[in-house]
Length: 217
Image 1 (cartoon, one colour):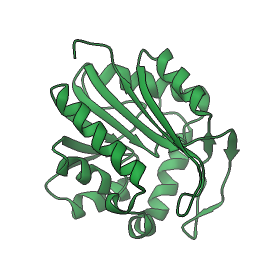
Image 2 (cartoon, rainbow, N blue to C red; image 1 turned 180 degrees about the vertical axis):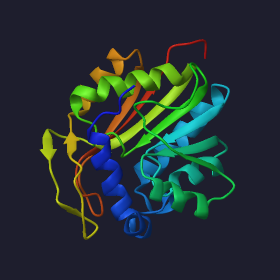
Image 3 (cartoon, rainbow, N blue to C red; image 1 turned 45 degrees about the vertical axis):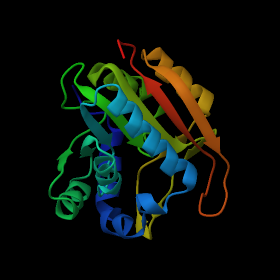
């Protein structure tokens, strides 16, 4: 499969900001109460469905991957940026991290107990989100769970800087209803979604969506 062209800009940008991002992104314990609660609920759902490997796609420097492991999941991280993967491996040597793309996960059909996409899909052009969500459906085991957390809205941004450094990625913020529709089109059943308005350290409206691949659990 030919790599979509936008991925090069995302990879280069996150390589550029990797060290600054790792220093400044909030740790899981510092997240807002709703985000912390949703991550705990996701872990409980995955365990209740029988467990299995959990892919943290767009894992960055690995803090949330490690948090999932502390919540009892067999979590591993995947990120486009080799520098992010290097930071994650150094910080959490007991966990697995690999460079890769959510458009073509190196996991077999029906093999994952869960997928976490935590603020990692908004760089995907909306026309290509069905490719990503189809890959989530392919790799999730029947009864497996997805947690997608991201900023929402109706906006296309082309930032030139992030964390004080130049970037060339784009950001696409979609209404939560549109994200749910695309997940449904990929064969995933949205079981819950919550939306939080900007407040305090939360810079913009965001949503967490829980979805499940139909199956026996």
